[in-house]
Figure 1 (cartoon, rainbow, N blue to C red):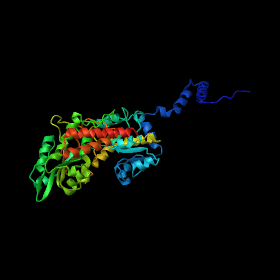
Figure 2: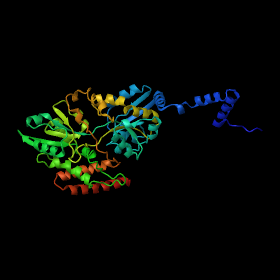
Figure 3: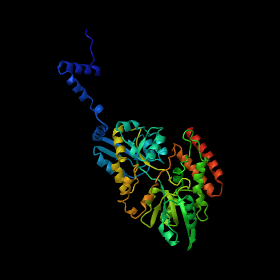
Figure 4: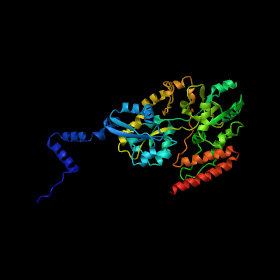
Length: 443
């Protein structure tokens, strides 16, 4: 009885090679078979990207921001669908926590760097896309360096996502109040001492109304502090609230709440009691907050100046606060998802986005400067070059336990505003944070 011979890959290759030899063409037909059999291996990155874009795919996208479908389509979805007509884009509204805990998955997840620990990292959505960056030869050198540095930190040298836009921090001010009290407007290049003096000058009572000189998005500003002081040790997750630069950054901003008449309401920080009096009640002269905060202020007589600087670091602004598109660990459409990431980080998309008044993530800021905000009437006549600093501070590491650290630093601010000394409030906050993080790690 003859043994059956299975015709596997090696046998097929051997038969093809023998056929080429017997043809009398010195192996040319064999080479032709080889060339025809491996088009994917021989295609360049551009061709591979084109092939991936042409393949039908359904991509499920979620966000940590809670954006509605209308908002997603306005900011991203419409342009993505136009670029990739073969892709079916499905955006999931509502709580990402509920969606994930119900056993469903995303292909792409959108998150700010601030919410990445509580969303992407907490639910293990992260996936190193270094292989896709290499496969498609995506050039990251054209992107603002700190946006990539943040990813390197998060991924231990790898990269989980690509930036789509960013913000930082800036000074917004009520021109009507400055006109009313005959005080010159804030200007670019102010030091923190200049800012402090101006806040004192603008804090007053007039005709029965109390006006505060300055309020701030304290939690965000500590997160983006110019001294690049981290909240937690990247390896041990121990609180670093008593490190010199952290104490300096904390006290530098917290002291504004010691100005008589400019106190922290109820000695409790929350964002609404800082920004609502500025743009709703209009009883605050200046507000330090995220650079893109102006989109919520409405059309009235406000303007922008650059964020104040330390005297010994006159060229260093706050850190960058990017939004990222992530290819998730659960995606079965990684190549298609990466085409979307590549597009939203491209100069083509960045230029369109800049026109809407959203800061780009291109390294060369001059490319978008002339068109920034042209499609946003709210920004007409505003000092838009002040939205981002000339130079971002080096990014700090954002860990899985950032929320626990933020909570205790906010509590420390309340205690400091109530009269306790800075070292005591930060020491006690560090102890509470360490205890909470240890309990979470032990679960």
